[in-house]
Length: 195
Image 1 (cartoon, one colour):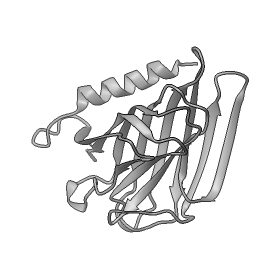
Image 2 (cartoon, one colour):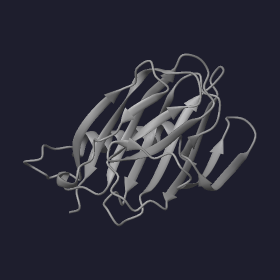
Image 3 (cartoon, helix red, strand yellow):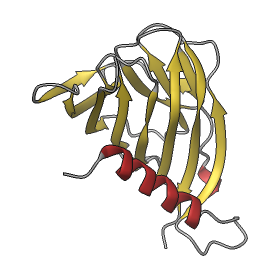
Image 4 (cartoon, helix red, strand yellow):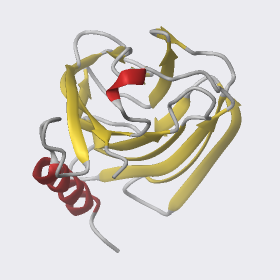
């Protein structure tokens, strides 16, 4: 079974290698923006997608999103018209490993957010999110892989996906810590070329 750190490093290296300026789209990704986590329970990435940017799929890299102390959940909500959608339009499924014992899974068909990770984290969250079908008339979907760590050298991870009943154009997202506030780390957002 592949090591999660190697998989995340490979994906990040591929992104860096293939990222190009808009005037020379020779790679599959275009860098859009970077958002730094600050002293807040959310990382606000609203209004970062536009109808005119030419993308309906995005690749998102979470780089060591840390919290003030141990955090138990990492959630995600999308935004429409710059406003967070928080009603029961989210469905998700997840497979996770806590770093000890065996695999576990969770599923929710009607939630107010997507659950990206639900194990204690003391070392921060690192991972990737693929977000597609963001244009009007489509149902946005996400696929994610998030790793974290807790005591000593224990690592844990969660992989999964989610959908929504929303068909309005999605223009961004928020990442949410269950508690406490995020203190550092970055979120990098890339558009995915169709060709």
